[in-house]
Length: 500
Image (cartoon, helix red, strand yellow):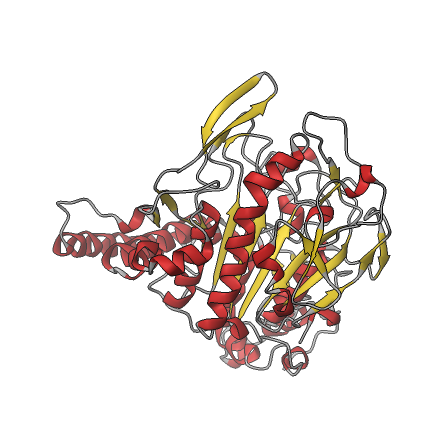
């Protein structure tokens, strides 16, 4: 066998660049590259797989709070700081001894003994960096964040998981999408700005974009929202939604007069076209088209996804456990999709009605946190953790709450007070799937303005999440030019203090 000396650079399935060069000499031996890769994958990443926490999470729910919640009004309160820093909210004791949370998180306070709180996350980009928080991109700027298809972007966390699962041959259900996102396509339900980057597959190709649901329902409350010279009453389902609310995929709703027999005849015709398409050498665009066709046909002929997304099938007591809000019911839908066989579900708390919304509290900080944000998160997050626990799913399910950054330690002078962007230190929370319970990692200084102990980056968090899902974060994936690029920057490290 030919042996080429070079640095080890692994693909997502554990294959190194050296292996690829090595395989180039196998043709004369009658062994094809596909056979070689299959054999090589069996022994990939053996060292990482021997770590007790590697692959502990069989599935994942990624919760994204767009706009960035304040660390000072959630999990890192500073009651002894000056008033202009600590604000008006009070801490309350939690089920984790010595760890207080905000008084407007009473349900979450009761499940703190099941989670790990990260209090020392830090990075240098105080912009709405959804892409920075959820992809391996090493840096971000405003122009990129407002351009989802900028070629500099890297693929979304869920897209990489889907890609690595496929290339490693992980057995997964073909009846359900493996990279699903709720409640509606990101940044599609507000006006005022262009779409934002983040949950896209980038150079992996559009076939690895998340499969988005559609929200079917209406709000039960309205609120006046302000943006520049606009002051508009918005019926916002994140504040509350009616009992008939549920979710669906458009592909699960065939035309009323389209029978299964007619669908099968259409499939037969598509198969004939596919035979001719083989001559096109499997170009990326054709591969993406084929994947979409297969997924659409599977969803249209199987009731599994439609039933899982219909949260109305749950008891009212269970729905109330999550809270009758868009966020709470999305978390419930995520749990149901995991039970149906989906590997990774993302739940986005997104802007609704106007830009500058959700958790981006530059103004009216306290009215919004008290009435619009903390209560919905409190019920939805705590309900999810308790329900996963009682369903026997928490040990196998990684729950990760991510966001862009934190908020400024010092309140501004805006109407209703406000906290601006602050990325030097902030807090996030994790649970299940190999995460240590009843745990706090890192600390901020006395004003929650900078790390005082164990600073970590968003890339370290992603590395830890990949690790728990059985993916070596130091593997590499091919970009548009076929060059191998790291899943996360090489400086990123798994955070051992987070692991059970």
